[in-house]
Amino acid sequence: MNRLPQLPPNARVAGTDEAGRGPLAGSVVAAAVILDPTRPITGLNDSKKLSSARRERLFDTIQSDALAWSIAQASVAEIDDLNILHASMLAMQRAVSGLQPAAEGVLVDGNRLPELAVPACAVIGGDATEACISAASILAKVARDRQMIALHAEYPLYGFDRHKGYPTAAHRDALAAHGACPAHRRSFAPVRAALARASAVY
Image (tube, rainbow, N blue to C red):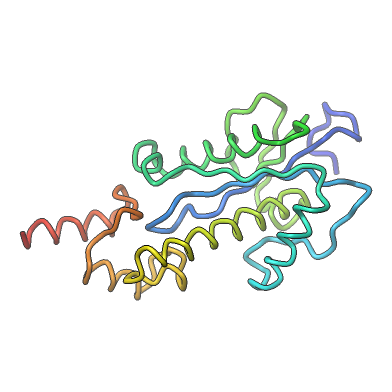
């Protein structure tokens, strides 16, 4: 199904998706992928439905076999300044802008569109139905997980390597015990609460 009928069938159509809207820490990461029709990639699916090992294998395959791919992010400071929705749109915009060759159309996972210079279509559940979006979701998820593992080396008290910044009970307990670190999103309510508790103590 051509979701961008104004484009010819052989146009370079990218899929884009983000990872990391829900966590309390770390950047939001987006990826954009233009698949090569002459080099189909088997096993693409919504990254959340794949095992970590399968995502890692596909990450390498996508980077070697796709026509173009790009990974970008919006920082913790940008999330706190813009809000997480607008920061996610910015990360996807950056990912699409980084494609070489450039996309002639874009399929975006979800129900909102970032500002783009080419025709675009929002696809709800697209990470499970559009191969190019599935590929982007895998790149974004793996790249962000690797960032959180690196952050764990800097801030080992929080368990970022296990929960990847999501608000698990263990993460909330660590916030309560140790306060927020520089990687935490100050605009998110649990982090604000931890900062408020810390200021009340001192």
